[in-house]
Image (cartoon, rainbow, N blue to C red):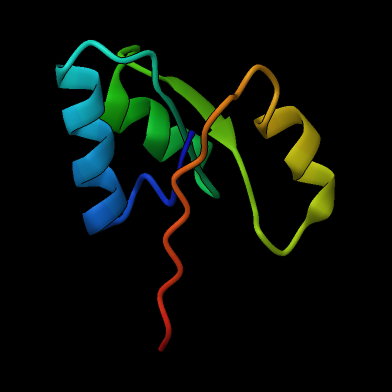
Length: 72
């Protein structure tokens, strides 16, 4: 699972994993935007770091996570 898949760095990583034939789950807080950007090339899931109730569903069947944290 690539978190923040609508962002620059994580989006780049997700697109390259997909291009290399990996089975990718992309996660972010805007599910509609994920579906538009990844157009059935990845599993798109809603995931919000600040809402623990989203963790279990988003992480279902996931065996690896790319987690980038950006400080502002």
